[in-house]
Length: 341
Ligand SMILES: Cc1cc2nc3c(=O)[nH]c(=O)nc-3n(C[C@H](O)[C@H](O)[C@H](O)COP(=O)(O)OP(=O)(O)OC[C@H]3O[C@@H](n4cnc5c(N)ncnc54)[C@H](O)[C@@H]3O)c2cc1C
Image 1 (tube, rainbow, N blue to C red):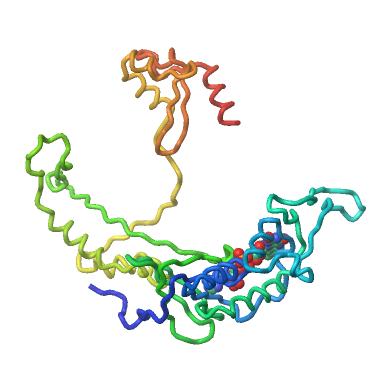
Image 2 (cartoon, rainbow, N blue to C red):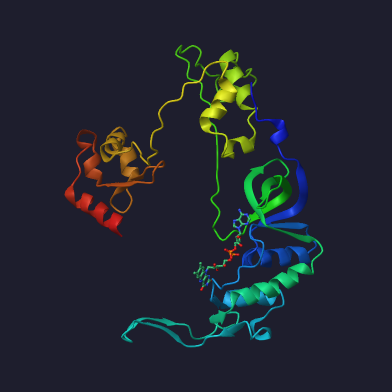
């Protein structure tokens, strides 16, 4: 069997209690809190320097509290953030009011509901606080890529933007503070045993099931093909499943080329459930009248499909055994109005 070239696998170069991906305001504030508590933190940021332009221009009273928690209360940095205690009015070119937002008052924490602030200046102050923390290391100019989990935590694969080797950070925790700008990849592999011979598809009874106490658990010999398939799939590494250079076809070929691999044309995934009003009505019709009487709540029988959460509402008289699939218009319209609400 072929696996990825081991020499391509990067070695763990860094360890941390927490790895933070992204050094915007969220990553900086988290690094400050963790670093002040003595945690070993590695921050990975793809940009070499601070972004020089404001993106956020306003913040709320909750953010004022967060600033206070790191010693940067709004009233101590008036040159960076100032309260706005007025209506906020949007007007068009003719001066007509399009939208008015009430930005007056104070929040529960007593900080103002709204502040205007200069994000680059605030980030500069946060950078200075991070720089004071010996347990926080910031890797600028590095892109975080694959993220894999193991028994002890997670491993982040990082690559310098300039030429350089990929390396890994092993951390108990990894926090994505990437401003939702990262396209995360996920991968999985499902192995199914579908023998033509029904005898080979037999499965052992679930233990203990309804067997009397003391009965030996039922067992069947494991089919050789299934054993082989499982042991081959067990060799797949997490990062192979998300490696953009390893296509699904290539991975399958690597695993099963000795047996032969057949790849079917891909089909579009759609959200679909096989439940239907008629099917649910027929299922209700199979219950006894007494059982159905116990299902009535507020004058109707309501059934929710546990796969797709569709709700079907029936009048009790519509699901008598002989008229199971009839639906009265008043119940149908009630259901429609429920769906609308
Ligand atoms: C035009 C505009 C106006 C906005 N106005 C407001 C506003 O008025 N009020 C408000 O609250 N918010 C506003 N926002 C949103 C604002 O950007 C965020 O509030 C703030 O910057 C979010 O901080 P953050 O730390 O979550 O993310 P960011 O500031 O986006 O920081 C994320 C960091 O992660 C880095 N990164 C991402 N992926 C990776 C990776 N794979 N490897 C390494 N590094 C990575 C990025 O380079 C970036 O530096 C605005 C945004 C824009 C674009």
